[in-house]
Length: 155
Image 1 (cartoon, rainbow, N blue to C red):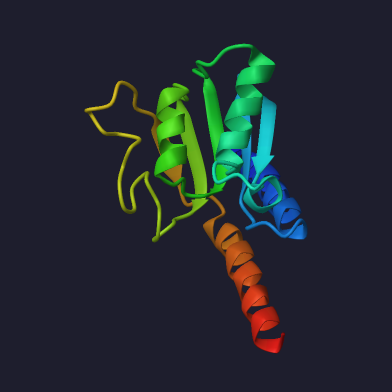
Image 2 (image 1 turned 90 degrees about the vertical axis):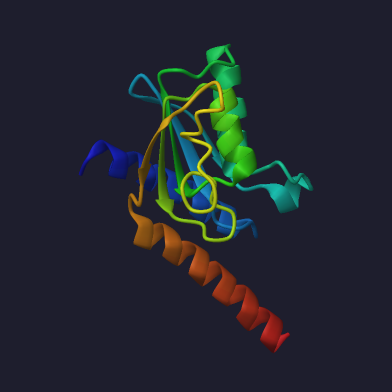
């Protein structure tokens, strides 16, 4: 198994934990210099915080653990293409690389609707690897929302 798939599997584990907590199943893992530094999973509902996206949590925790806001040398793995807020946070954190699973046709900001990762008007750009374990990542989301619809329709 290649390195990207290995770390994406860890992000998928975080997404599954989010789903078990009633959150949209999105997970993230921050890897710096070959070591997992931080992880995150969606916590918007439990934290009542619109910024509690998996990526934001992993970035904040990683910066705290490393004692620096510049996360150069780091790669963020996330199960869903980041939204504009999270894609912008990767710019501001100076992250070198993003690896994501499923594309987000409603809010994707690293190639689908926008591309904040490569916008020459911004002061930092980062490499993107898209579609790593995309089917597995996408199926987690589909199953979660299918379950919500079934509960709503039967409730």
